[in-house]
Length: 142
Image (cartoon, rainbow, N blue to C red; front, side):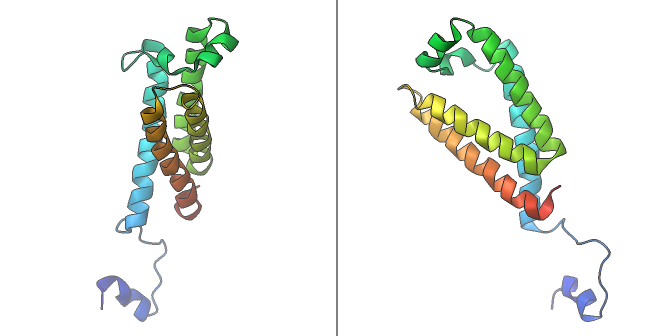
């Protein structure tokens, strides 16, 4: 018999569920932290291009639609991404869904031109994680 089972056998119910040792709750916490931080960092970098030149990831058809306003567009993307990161931190259920949908849009953009299929695959993995957080948030989240 586990020590954690003993209170239930004695008819004692804890006032709050013990979550700290629950692996699924720990995974949930890691996902919240990661999906709050990653959009904040990537969004902020849209202003500095310190990590990479984000403009290279925009499909040529989008370049034509934007009429050369790529930098302004990327700054808008940065604001949206930072907002999504804050939303994940505040309301994981809503924020994780927004991030998953946003990543799906990025994947669509990347599949529109060759040379970035590896990045699209990575973003697919990130989208799976975001939607997994969305599902876990029904159990543990807001």
